[in-house]
Image (cartoon, rainbow over all chains, first blue to last red; front, side, top):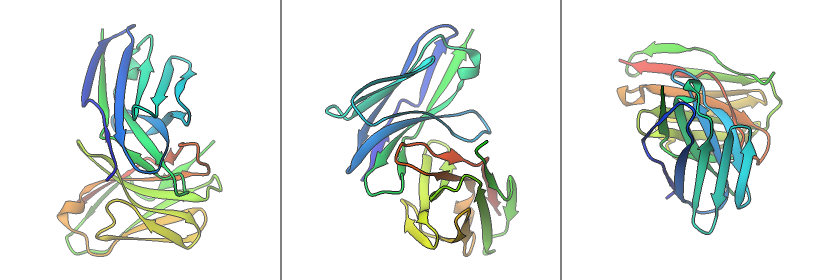
Length: 111
Length: 112
């Protein structure tokens, strides 16, 4: 079956850098996406990696290594508003932009 | 602005009732999805549709069916609601292979 593993919780202080890891076991892997979800809110798209390497979008960066079946989301200059759940999601071949999500990492940012 | 709307934010139904959850997107997207989200389990795909009248089962389709008669609307149907279908239901749409899906606000369904 398809599975994506993430740590369940990560805690960091405001202003710090935090890395959220995601290892995956899927067949027909096409790429890796990251989503943010605040409590009571809808998931929102953060980034997408189709190729190996680092993609940077402002304070957030995402990395993919296909050979290691591994990716991570890097959040820099942490702010209190970054406290949320973060999900990695594998895009699978077969059309339709179908995603399989990890179980999510709850990030707590403290003063 | 991109928008996905869902018919209800909160819904309470009784065991055995037929339940309809509606989702509408205004972005002319080909692909639409229904997920359920439960604590500790992430988002799990129930059904998706890549075109009008086309549908495919996701990872947990048992107890659910879907309907897509128009491009902008995707309905999730619980034929006979059961207590284990109490959950948050999220609809999403997308147009490309770029891993980006747009989510609605969710419907929190309670089956008693």
